Length: 537
Image (cartoon, rainbow, N blue to C red; front, top):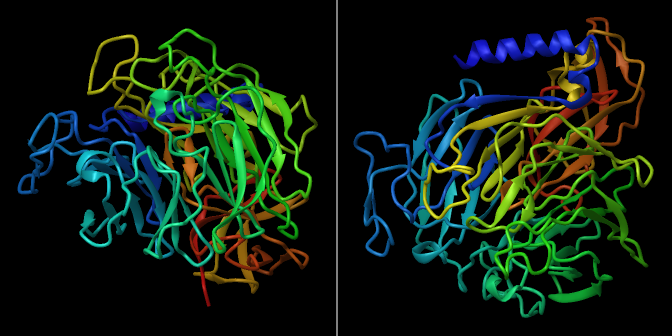
């Protein structure tokens, strides 16, 4: 039934685009009616599949493991010591089919990041998963792939509610977590000696500093933010270089989380701007105040400026638990969340159904546009990921300890896709098709990409590389958009294809090695992406 519904929605949007309705605010479609698991973590792979993860310690999911697959046997599990249901799954974006995956240790509030070869590294969790690393090496649809639990190495401190970020050499740095205010690495290279005073507090002491926002700046240092405070950290020297001004307006991280994104890197890649939006009021979590309105402010800071200062803006409405998704155009969509309460089980009300578009190049006070709403609440434990076709995949939402079907906010097993305005029918004549792209790129070198377009090119054309982040708890770990420099005029070839020459990023500080979605964007309308790895020569 999904295909006819999708066709009808697209036909309706084509008709409405004539009068400008769909082109004003995008549209939604349910692509999976029952994924079987409530998606708490999600990541898009280079084979156009999506890894979905839930926690493993509250009993059976709604998705059975296939016959013959090993059940999860855990004598320390709080609910089921033998569990033959899946707590991870793989979504095939071509067919929207779900395949159960097997995971053996507890992934509750864990973290993740892709390694340079496209393998998903997943770290930490709770209970028996607290010190574990797990890997998932994605495969084509004719092969079989599943989770591998690593026996060595393990996390030295245990990491629960931590954040991962890939570094220029392909190493993963793991920052923070409950009870831990340090960093460590995969592969191991020792823990950092710096103790960050604003990280690692236990959440119920109103330490709103879990799942810190970590961004790799083009200076080579890390911007690390938690609660209301940010520092610039030189991980090579293991020193704090700068302490940024405090962000006003209340706490911004779990359990009072808003969200954060680094804006697109471009031109000479020397400037990095960080946005942090929304959050809960300071005492909403501590007092279990589910009706206390969320925050509506956004802070914006040029993190590479020698005298950085926060510029404050206001969203169209308040929001906590939102997810900020970088679009191929360099614009940002803020999606999911609630308008009151805080993160945690049953601690929020008034779902934020309308996404908001943030256009960073517009003047202060005119950057936000409210988009068309979903009908499905996406609150605690929901995710949002950019897809190679330009849509946003939205999944999860479980405001309960276990799977619960009571209203008003039952455990959510449906998966949706949100199509931004650029995919509307009235933009189809602008949408490029990538005819030929490089199989890989090396830093600083020139490459050709060939495209076709229904209408002649008359405006701005960009080649933009978008990372595949790990989405969980209102933050997409490792999210990055890098705009390539185009040093030569675009040429129309005799075969009707346009040849674009672009220059790869100069180094791994600007774009760490790994697989990126390469979009060609024509006047704000992106192509379907090609997966292109940036490799260290």
